[in-house]
Image (tube, rainbow, N blue to C red; front, side):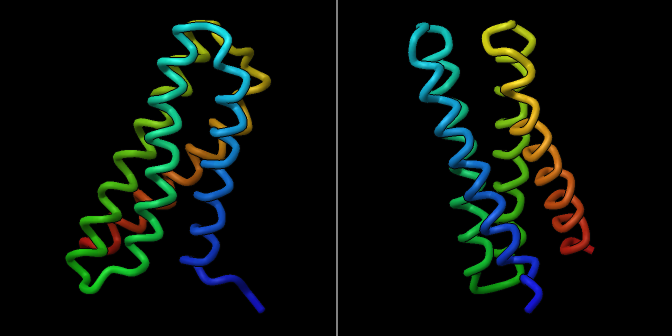
Length: 118
C-alpha cells in the first residue's frame, strides 16, 4: 500500500529530526557548536512536531497556519546547517545528507503551503 503524503512527511520530518539529534551528539565538544547545535535541534524537532500538528488540524485555516510554522522552522534549520558548514565547524560531507533532506522537505512543504492557500 502506498504511503500517504501526510504519513510520508510525518516519517521524513521525524527521521530528519533524529539525524539532527545524532549530529548534535558530535557537536558538544566546542562551545560555539553546542550553542548553534541547541538552536538546530530546536528548529529541526519543531519541523517534525508542527507537521504532525498540522495533520491533526481542526480546520483548513489551522492546517495552513501550522504549515506556515513548519516552513519557517525548516528554513531556520537549513540556516543553522549552512552556518555550521560555512564556518567550517563540521565537515561538509557530514552535513550534506541532512542539508539535502532539509532542503527537499522545505521545497515540498513550501509548495504544499502555497497550494493550500490557493
